[in-house]
Length: 261
Image (cartoon, rainbow, N blue to C red; front, side, top):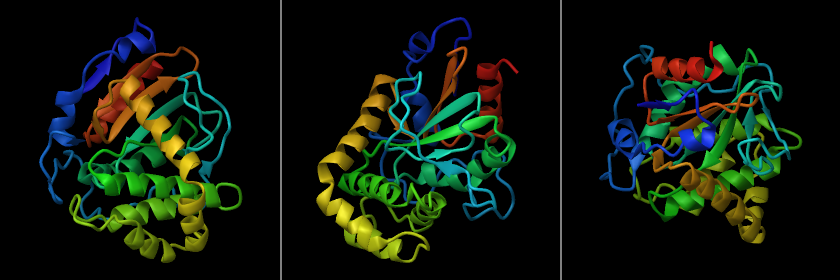
């Protein structure tokens, strides 16, 4: 479930295959439609049914125009955490993937509390839409939402992101068509649905290029499912990979191995 090689560079490390892992607790292009069922991850808090994510009193989201040592251009991607955090986690998601929803609701709040808020870990939110055309639409809208809020109200992105997962329907059932996504967006405080719609219509090429860059990064690192994560030590350049909505204990293990904690 966790791929690591502490003595190799991150490029050699991430040549390992993890497609079979995704089938255990994640969405892949070969999986049938799963509706709302999935692996529960083993250590889900009782009664946890909402994504609090980064909704604490302190702003955790911010924008950057840097290119990381992992060769990811951050200009179009939301970042959560401290710019000085020693570890990055690159998180690829598909808004139609039920396992992504499970990660968002069960594991992300713990990562925020234990690693992101304390400044130990910085998360880069990336897109890997492959379940259907609606996944591509949702990914492009995500990029447009970020473009409209990143300068003045970046935390509004997290509220939108969480709301889309809250409203998630069965894969390719029509719930993620542009019209419906815009209707959901109108109910998210701090996000201008009109500006988002204009972005979808007028900035199509730029937004598509941003999504395509995320997809290419996934392919380059043998990411074939969602949710998928690469943990990267920005100083040592050691890395590890997780695919699927795995137990929180596995995320802790990945962080310890990469960080040599």
